[in-house]
Length: 384
Ligand SMILES: [Zn+2]
Image (cartoon, rainbow, N blue to C red; front, side, top):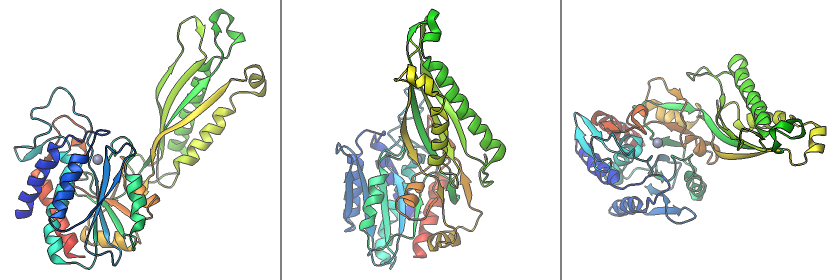
């Protein structure tokens, strides 16, 4: 119970920092740094290019053997103007729930981890615990890359990263990856009455979008499949499309955006390469000759890899022993795939709160979830 009270006290402080993504999180980071300093724990900060945001990592214990990572992001999604019953920046308890932006996604987890630091320090465990707190997760896991890169300075690669995104404390062993791509089609404009003399960018955009839809249909009908997922195959769809400037002008430009959500065994890069190849073949050699400006230009707007933990790894076995219930796979993404792919560190997701409350008005976390997370962290530390 003492740890629960400590966690709520810390959560109050964390929620009070407006760390909406792309705004500064430095006040929150300074608070965490100060808190850890009380226990003589040194923090490493890795700043964003413009120095307004920072990742923090800190090791409790000695880097004398492979440790475990407790990881979370410090940023939160923007607050809706209306519809909040309590101040989003002031943790409010009501009916067994703690309300506030970020209470669930995911300052609740950070608070529980920090609340257990004093007991971890006192226990003087052999295995180190690395706290990894990132920025700019909510705009496509942008901040964590430099943190994962910095972890290479450790003498021993950690054996597991536990990402505390809200899973109702269920152990999640895999999630899909995501790639968001924009495409601009360049054609040739003119009076629409002379359409055959022009190159209609919107129509070529439409043909490209149809190719994307065909690929998506093929994933559904022919796989590859992974039945660990509710939707057991990769998905792909166009979500934005825009082109043309007037009803009587052949449009010379069209832009559309599509996303790929891939199962970990089917890399998004491969899907993108196939789509791109097929779309670029839409312009025949003759068309290219007549309209040298005819082109599709592509931009990967953001991406994060899928996560599929190596179930035979020592780290996964360690966590699984503490959490014997069946581990799940989910469709939403986390920083776990980046720890796994870029850091070569096996990753799982397990944290307090329900993903259904994340990114919502009146975001809350149930008090019981804080208690359950606290119990998990206690068990975890005892097993080190
Ligand atoms: Zn989150």
